[in-house]
Length: 510
Image 1: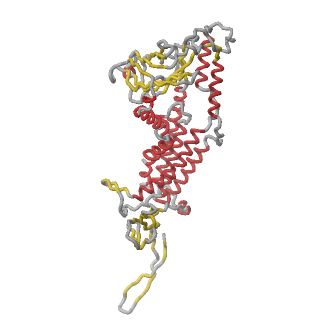
Image 2: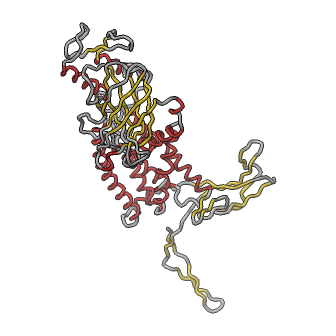
Image 3: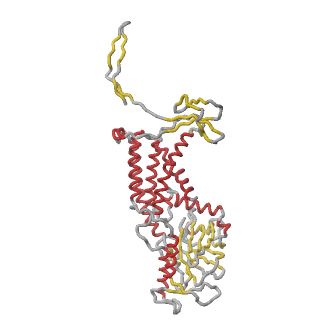
């Protein structure tokens, strides 16, 4: 903006000139800067070099180079980010002057608070879905324990309300027919995409497992009668051994081959490394837990990274992406100097790709930092583990039934001692183990895994949210008011969801 007086020239008879001064005028102008260069590809060093080349003329679309050698050469220029003029920001921060920017911020903040309500409700429901559920048909006198982890598929109508039963066979024993979803619990079981944990008690160890037979009575109503079983993991609590039974099939009359009874062999090394199984499991986990935006809706209930925290992280990263894209907005010429890709009405220049790469490179570090803080931070209150709760319930059930085998090794009711034999050929009880000791051993193993870990920096749990969301919100307003940014909203829309998060998932998984 400039304002000055200049002389106005009025022509009179030849030889006569009269000068008068106008009152002045106002004129708006724009200013842009760039740095151009001429480079050639040095085949000896396999790098681009400017030796022997100079720029003789340049603008934002064309660069003219002069070189003293005949080689393959090209040109490029560095796009400087928008600078912030604070005096201009405060002088032009009116609501009507920046209507698009203010409305965007107001709407995004309103959606954020609405999303917080949704996320909080879902977090409370997720609490009901966690925990290890003792099977309803566990006998109080049964002393050998297994954890069953049942994965229901993610495809539509994969869950069931039918009565699901199974039996497991091993080298030493075969379990009785057991029922999965008859336990008294308020949480929904075997729903679409769910991972349910059960505690199964047997009279003696089954040995190395061979196969799983599983079926249901098709008694659910409507679409709830069928069930898609992904796979089941059986973990021996005493020995730590783990066996996996991969199904990935319907147990349904109206789906697949129409069978509701499956015989599944234990998975071998080759089946566990099968591409279809590994890929399906990895994609499900990545989309549900690792992709920051999708995980707000698909978050696994057992994750300590809550939906509220994920949504807040999304908003912080969204504002950061807006800030970075605003810094480089309108810095790329509409028609490049060549080398670009044009697909119909869409034109992508190397400069645009470079700016996109730089923008995402700036966004990545805080993206990793925020997610890392939330995932690795300790809970405010240490709670009893889910396995401890399940073991305690099993012990209390046995004590209340008062059907423990008589043995001089059995203590008072409160101790809950019991015996089991690891020798399948022996009918005598040669090893005494208490559930208290088993719980203590579980905690001891957990403590061993923690050896060598560094103590994390302790900060208030809300500190990252306030610092990132509030600070970036303010800086976004400052930058947006200086640039007249409208199309900047389009640049931000797909970058985080389609590029930043998938690349972050890939890097974290390797």
